[in-house]
Image (cartoon, rainbow, N blue to C red; front, side):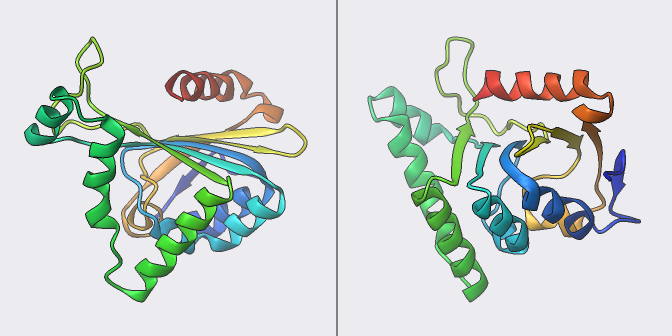
Amino acid sequence: QWQPRYDSDVDNLVKDFYEPALQCAIRYDRVSGYFSPAILTLVSRGIEGLIRNQGKMRLIVGCTLDETEVEAIAAGEKLKQILAEKLASPLEPRTPHEANALELLSWLIAHGYLEIKLAVPCTPDYRPLANQSIFHPKAGIIEDSNGDRLAFNGSNNETVQGWTGNWESFHVFTDWEGSSVHVDSEEKTFAELW
């Protein structure tokens, strides 16, 4: 039984929604402005269920580029290399908890349970743009082994702060209780972005 709305003032977003939903999942598709690997260790019980189900998590998260990175891309460097360099420094662990989160992130990617794509600001003709405006939608789709899907759409990012620290709320729609139009809409949006 899923509530139609979860609110951090009255609900524990992780225990009441996120972990139980992931434990049932064979697929989790998510768009978010921000992502932090620490979220994976926070919801490790849910991640364990996803793995037991041979499930897969796909994330599309926002990323910004500065002027020197855009100039390097224009000079012929590959976007993937530029983004790898940009992301390398913040992913160096500063604490044991961060090290555990990064280890889990690496393991999930190496074993095919997690794919991540970055949404980079671009011009209309798809050239990278130096801009601090970011991709910022926040929604997810979770599917179980029966093919039942639920979608959620709201304010929280895919970060520890977004699931436990901020005041956040989101709505939940299930395709087996008459909300298939909304679930299908989120599914279509994710497919177009992926």
